[in-house]
Image (tube, rainbow, N blue to C red):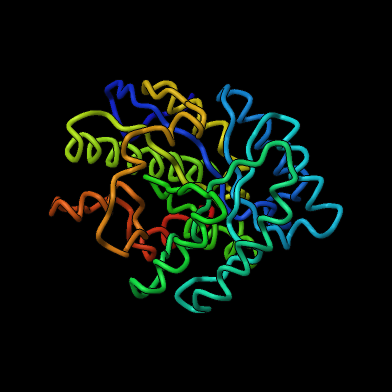
Length: 289
C-alpha cells in the first residue's frame, strides 16, 4: 500500500510535468532503455502530455534520437534546454545564445516541438545586461519562457542515489521511494500554498523533474500519490497559459522558480522544505539496513 506522507487533505491543484536534460545516459539503477520504457508507461497514467527540455548534443547518436522519437510518439512535447547545458553565468551571453540556436536548429524540425526555453540550472544571468541580451535573442526566435514553479530537487536526490549505487552498496529502495514521494509532494504542496498567497488564487504549477533513474523507478508511484491527494495533471500548454506567465519580475534570481521570484518581488518570504542539498544527500544515500 502506498502511504501518503505529506498531506491528509485533498489539495485539488493543477500541475504540469516537465523533465530536464533528456535524453540521459544509463545510470547505475537503470539502463536508459528501461528508464524510458518506465517513464513512458507512468506518463500514460497521468493522461496528459509532458514536456521534455532537451539537450540536443545528446541526440547526435541513434540512441539519443530514438529516445526523443519515442516520447514524441506518445504525444509529448520537446523544448529547448540548450545544446549542452552550459550555465549562462559561466559562458557569457554570446556563447549561450549560440547554444540556444544550435539546439533550435535540431528541435524546430520535430512535430512535437514547442518554443519554450528553460535556462540550465534556472540561472538567467549575472547582470541585467547579460540577461537582457539573451532575452532579446529568445524573443527574436519567438521563444516563450519554459519556466518552472516547483523544482523537485531531484537532481540532488539523484546525485546522492547514484553515488551510493556506484559504490556497490545496497540501498533500502522502499525508503528511497518514500523519501522521493515525500520531498516532491511536500514541495508541491508548499508552492501551491505560496501561489495562493501571491495571487490570492490557485495557480497552475509546473513541476521540474529530470529524466533520471529516480523518475524511472518512482514516477508512477508519484503520479498515483498526487492523484490520490486531489491533484489534476494538465498539459504544459495549459499550464503556461496561467496569467503568472506574463508577470514582469525585477530579480535576476530565478533559481527557485518563477513563482518564488514573483513572491520575492512582493516581499513575501520563500522558504520551501528540503532546500538543503546536504539533507537530501543524507536521505538518498541511506544504506540498506
